[in-house]
Length: 242
Length: 242
Image 1 (cartoon, rainbow over the protein chains, first blue to last red):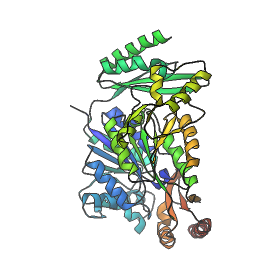
Image 2: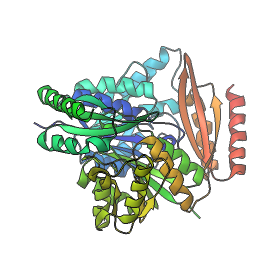
Image 3: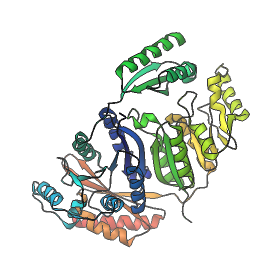
Image 4: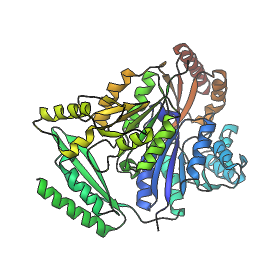
């Protein structure tokens, strides 16, 4: 059976302006690979309601899962929860369960919720909360869309809470073989290798170290025996090109 | 006049698998902000012909410019040039000008082109070469699509070659004000500020330093006087919340 598929939707002007280098998509990619869910697309969009709604509807109709990051805080630029509700055509309001989680977290620090903080308890109708220890403001899952925070430490905690609830596939394994020659020198045998092992994906990643032009070959697949075979063939190619 | 718009299309299984953390979109975002071209979307897609063609056609029809990275080397997984030709419905073959650039670069290292290396001189009909000093294999521009390498140092060199040829807009400026309080504490005055200054975008980015919950407020716009005004108002808010 093929693995479940996924897309990541990063909501953030700060990524598009170059202020911030995304960390959440990179973290998600590694976690999904280990879990056996195939990440097929990443999109970064600005904090614009109709753009978020359009991207959500395109992605949730195409992939098994959609993971979002960003835009669920208390300020005016936090518009993700409303966009998700609009995409699903459901209502959204402060919900008692989310409010309880938020108020318990604030109470532990001797505080009560301000009206702005209560905005973080606005949850689309029919969603399930993603509760985590780091943040009193919960994320949520609605349908196949998992809505999480943009702050990397909280994104990590929310993903750790939601991933075990999802059906896993066969973890995608990878092995890497380093060649101290440029990729042009090995392109022909690589092409033959890729054709002979259709269930193994063969990626070629050139690098430079000082004057050395080298190439890392990464083979990926779900069957460790096939990957061992691929690695043995790569080592035989390496022995030939010196 | 509004600024030109842009999208980035990153072609790379290695990003989606979590092996590599993207650097090119981050670099592009900063360069475009300085140039006055508004980056509106980033997409990462796998090395799959029809997916690349579909994304290219969606993006080139929506934005002033599309910048791509990855998939223009000599190996079997380098399929970007063919996908671009298919998206534009034009032919592709080894072209004399690209071949001359490639062979001159190889000759400088005492080499001649192998058939695999000649693949890197395959250029869609009607494209203009993006020549750079770091790589003998050129990128190219066709229509509003700029096709560049995935290796970050070469991507940087190619972008430096192509950016000065594009019509620039008003550079998007930003100023940042740090608050040593969580964003909930300042959400109400921030909302008022954002409403009063519609030509300034106001972003709120919470952070933690040990036990401190702080917030960086970033104001962005093209008019430095309006940004100075926004910063003065933010400092007045900061004086009030302590």
